[in-house]
Length: 428
Ligand code: ADP
Image 1 (tube, rainbow, N blue to C red):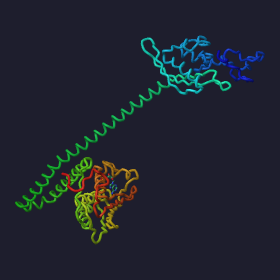
Image 2 (image 1 turned 180 degrees about the horizontal axis):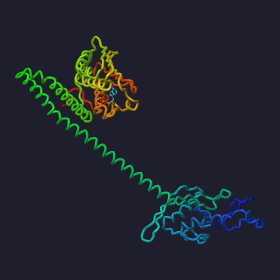
Image 3 (image 1 turned 120 degrees about the horizontal axis):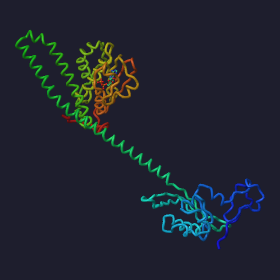
Image 4 (image 1 turned 90 degrees about the horizontal axis):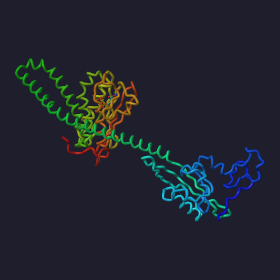
């Protein structure tokens, strides 16, 4: 005979009394509302799955909630063996085994997940419980085990739905990323093919224009002189088209990791002077008074075509965005660096614009007012960084801009910025 559960001493109105006892301890005289709550009363009403089982595995108490989880009325449990009430072959049947262990060892078992498959009409219903088993001790002796069962079915269903939703969202995001990457790849491929295709007829047109003008001048010198200004306009426009096409080609080279550098000994002062000369007409047309602060020589190893390309971009931007105001150009050597500054007093750049303008296709002005692809500074930065240098800008809206280029006088050993950039052997 297992020890019976006793009555807690000196119970206040909120204290539990065990099953089988009135728990009123001679307090029947008290008004109903002041009497202590009996454990059986509590078990009959509380919504928690809870039971007390004695050493013989008999239900001493069971809450209404747990009884309904077992699919039997509460009364069908009380005083009955666990195996009589619960199917020992079902997942719930393992409960008896765990209770026995707790009774034998006196050690609690916490957070045991139970997956229970209930055969329903046609469909099997899966329910998930979490159970804990605790010994009930008296004078150091285990006299019973208490079972707590939480029904997690609904919570798990909500979690599973949320996980499935998150997985769906992740899949949609990944798909969108793949499509974007594919679209970018297709665009770069298109740029590369289009630029190559455009270059051939352009080169041919320039050659034929020069030939035509020479032939006309040879046969009819007066007509040649008359046509010369138109020839120059055509020449300028063709060369503009040519440099746009080259820019597109460079974008695809950067994307393909084929932007090449061929450094050789140069005097940067001389290159800057030549470029300023070549641009003097453009600055004059833009109404920019030019002041150039360069002196002596500044020797170093640079790719002449790439340096020219960078200068073309900075000077043409100064003429375009600084039209009607003076432009100052300076070049100095600082240790192993050549520092070139192009300063205009034009429209300037907003803070937001400055954060973006070295990016691909990024512009800080509207197309209606200023034409352009938004690629010049992107390519410039790629080239400058491939040379181991840097390009920065100081500007404020409406207050002009200063672009500062820092180039090391010697090429570095290996490209640090982009494995994408090939030094030596220009890509064709
Ligand atoms: P593009 O001139 O073809 O638009 P760039 O890459 O050369 O492309 O320049 C990117 C943007 O940076 C320009 O659209 C313009 O908004 C801004 N920008 C460049 N240079 C200047 C400058 N000197 N003054 C003001 N804004 C400039």
